Length: 183
Image: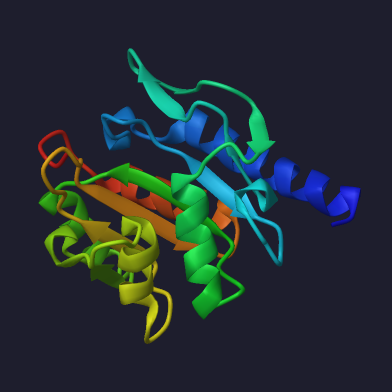
């Protein structure tokens, strides 16, 4: 890929991270931390997907990116994006946020297209994100994919979109609507 294309991915992802750092409700950050990723137009591996090194965490009452934006920084969120792109190449970004039924209800109120998968139905020998995301994308890529967890696996919501600024805007729409009791 051209260096300027890689630089544009980093720039746009940086803009999204700044939006989240400045305005996101910290209660949306999962225990395992969150990440937001943005892929080059034709990713071949996670090295073609940029994300935040070390994830984004809750630091007191602040949203805090642990490291810089880099290609290859996330395996988990990169797999979400790359799997979604197999169904719709325009969906090049995703982020994970904390799951709660109340948050799902609010996402429904915002009229997002939502799909879920059940980790207990995962076939053996396949990675959860590859299988779970693919199972939700057969009829088009939804705005939101979630699961309610499994033994040792935190429930999680994933927000998908064309680019990280779109994903960040959608997270901020949600963030502006949640109340103390919802997360």
